[in-house]
Image 1 (tube, rainbow, N blue to C red):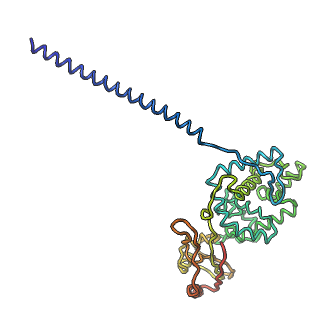
Image 2 (tube, rainbow, N blue to C red):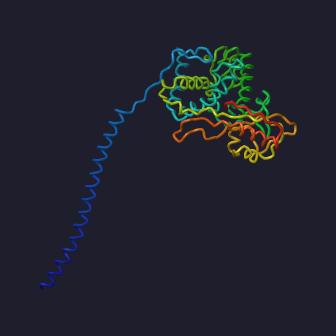
Amino acid sequence: MPNQIILKLKSFLVTSKKYFIAFGVLILLFSIVKLFSYSNSDGDKAYKDAFRSNYKVYDVPIPQNLDFATEKVPTTDFSVREAMEKELLINTYWPSQTLLLEKRANRWFPIIEPILKRNNIPEDFKYIALVESQLTNVVSPQGAAGFWQLIAPTAKGYGLEISDEVDERYDVAKSTEAACKYFKEAYAQFNNWTLVAASYNLGMTGVQTQMDKQKVKSFYDLLLTDETSRYIFRILAIKEIISRPKVYGFLLRKKDLFPLILTKKLMIDSTINNLAEFALNFKINYKILKLYNPWLRANMLTNPGKKKYTIELPQGSVNIYDIDGNYYGSNKLSPMDSINLLFNFTMSHDTVIPETTPK
């Protein structure tokens, strides 16, 4: 009898232990859930309080005296002012893109500006290249290429060479000259620089057709496609931010801007059978050669007509930054290096004219 009682007691305790353990686990889980629930609740409140007190978004100032190529922008017109505000907001609060534009502008505007000046084109037209391509050699779905986004027929019409091996739309200086020819032609038609800029997007015929149809003479009175309507205001917004970056919260040091790349020029009038091997003659690689001369579109340059081409090469080392990112420039070649360079080149090619120029 006592043995039976002991066995039943053991069985009860074993069974009860399982229930006790299960109950304990449930209590523990409930406690953990409650703990994290209270923690998350407190954390959410603290986060929201910090967000409200610290995160600020400001509207952008609209300049009182805004102009394109000295032609006044009528910002008292609500449609003009709000269109301008939209582009300023987009470009101010897209800082990564706008920072890159400002960095690139510091490198390339010194090349573009003198060409515009020589052709009597207002300096503000440099911002067209910035808006068109972000100063990169992109190709549009329509086949427009280079900084100025020229399509092949237009480029050829303005004297640029385009072939399987050469595409001068990718030559910054030559494509800027071609763009200037367009600007001159458009100004002769419109006698207004803002309309000239708009026509660079829509075409001279497109702008003239809408002016005749709507019976107005100012760009700011025209109803155009969304792209062309935004085009001028995008240019104005980029001009405003890059001209006065601190006003819009962009604080760049001089070292943060991309510096000019100094080059030397080699004039050739013969065939280059292999550009990779050609590059090695000058102690650079194929990649660097193409970066300096993006208008070379193949791995060779056949030149049966002995046309003169100018190839740009680094002036010394491509290591132009120190370890902290400070620009200290490319090292100039010593007189002996220049003599050796000239000798090595003329052994296999016809003409070399070393020249230092900013790229």
